Image 1: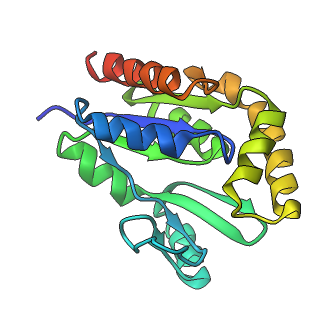
Image 2 (image 1 turned 30 degrees about the horizontal axis):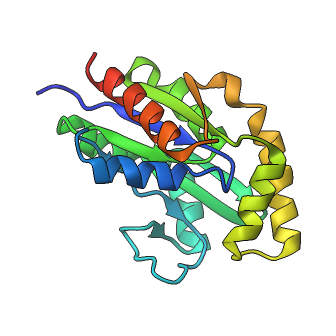
Image 3 (image 1 turned 90 degrees about the horizontal axis):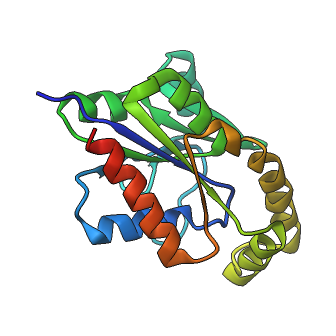
Length: 190
C-alpha cells in the first residue's frame, strides 16, 4: 500500500487558513483527511472533542509531551498549548491516506523538517498586517488587547514564511483557494 502524504498549512491567526481548508474539503476532489490537533484550551461554542480538537487537560497534555506522543507541539500563547499527536499521522499515512495539518507556524516548520519529502508546507500570508488587524476586528471574537497580541504574533510569524515550501497570499480568497488546491494536487500526484 502506498504511504499517505502530509499537507501542512500554517498561517498567523486571521489569515484565512481554516476557510481555505474548508473550501478544499468542500471541493472534494483531493483525497485527504483532516488531522485533529490537541489543545489544552476549553472548547469554544460549537466545537466537539475529537472533531474540532482533542481537548486535553493541562496535566494530560504535559504527560503526552513527556511521553513523546507529539510530532509537534507549541505553547502558542502563555499556558495555551496546541500539538499534533504522532498517532494521528502514523495511523492515517500508514493506511495510505493523505493528512492535512492546520497548525501554527513554528509547528509547521518543525513537522516539515521531520517529514521531509513526505510533506508539503504551505504558508498562508495576509495581504498586509493592517488587513489582518481589520479581519480580526471584524470577527468580533477577541478583545482589542487580544487582537493586538495576535497582530504582534502575526508579524513575528510572517518571518518564518521563507521556511515553507510555498507561500500563498490571501488577498483574494477564491484565488488563494485555487492556488492552495493546485499545490496540494501537484504534490499528491507525484
